[in-house]
Image 1 (cartoon, rainbow, N blue to C red):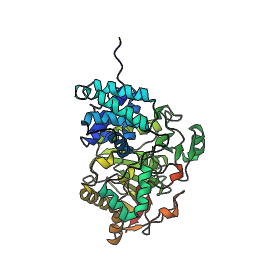
Image 2: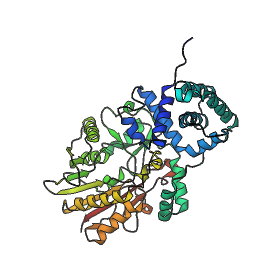
Image 3: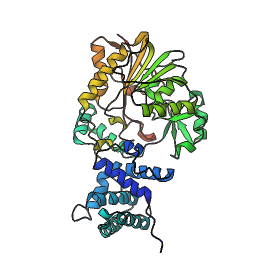
Image 4: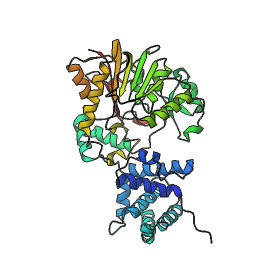
Length: 426
C-alpha cells in the first residue's frame, strides 16, 4: 500500500503559524528565510501555505472558539496549529470535510510530537464539522488592548470596530500602472477597475507573475493607499528626487515613471536588490544607494524628497495579520524618535522651493499627525495643500495632512492605513 501523501502546504502553513504565535517571527521574514517552511515547495504550494497562515491569523479568535467548544483541555501547540489550519479550511475556506480531516490526521502522524494526538485531531474536527451551520461566520478579530485603546482615543470606538471588520477580509490586489494614461486599458486587460486615485484594483487574485503586463513591466503591485504619498507631489518631471527608506520601491518607481531623476536610498542591501530587479523589469532607472539615512550625507540638495519612514506598520494589518502578535508598540518611542531624526535631516536637504512628503503606514497619530505638528511648530516646515486626484476631502486633517484608514472605501475592499503630508521648507 502506498503511504498517504502529506499535504505540504498544510504542514507548512502550520509551521508558519507556529513561528508567529510561538516564536514572534514576522510572517514575511519566515517566508523569505533560507530555512523557510516553504523552501522546498513549488509555487502553488507556497502560495497556498501563505494563504492558510494569513487566513487563520485573520480569524484566530473565532477559530479557537470553535475548537475549544470540543476540547476538554488545551492540546500541545503543535496539535493546536494543525487544528487551526484544518478548522480554517472547514469553516472559512469551504474545503470538503473528508479532505480536511484526513489530511490533518496525516500531518499529525508525520511528526513524532504530534502523532500521539492524531485521534484527538480527528475527533475534534469531525465535531467541528457537525456543529457548523451554513450561516457560520467569524467575528471580527479584535486588536490588542493597548493598540485598540490608542486608536479609540484617536478615532472613536465605532471607527475602530470598522477597522477591525476591514482587517477580517482578504485585501484585494492593487496595481500601479507605469503609465497612468494606460490605466483604463490595463484594467480592462486585467479584469480590474481604475480607482478614483489612479490605482488598478483587480476583481480576482492570481499568480502575479502570470498576469498580463507583468513581464513587460507595465505595472507593479502597490496598495492604493501606499501609492498616494508619491502622487501628492504632482509634476516631478526633471526634478532631482530622493526616496529615503526606498525599499520595496513602489514609490520610487512612481517618481521615476513620472520623469524624476531619482536617488533611491535604503540600508537593506537585500531589499535593494529587489528594487533593482523591479527597475529592470519595468524599464525604469534610478540611482541606488545602500546607506543608513541617519549617517548618509548627499552631495547636493533635492527638489523632491519622499520619506516613507520606518514605523509600527499598524496601517497594514489587513495585509499582515501577524502584526498584532508581534508586539509592534513596544519600540514605539524609539521608532518615533527615529522618524523625527530622519524628517529633520530630510528637511535640511531640500532645495529652495523644494517639496517633501513625510509618510508612514501607521494608524497612530504619534507617527503621523504629531510629527507634522512638531516641525510646523518649530518653524522647520510649512504644510502645502493636497490636490491629488481622487482624494476625499474628509481624508484631510485640520492641519492639512492626509489620513487614510482601512475602513475607507469599504464597498470596494478598503485600503491600508497611511498618513502623509506635503511640506515645503520653513
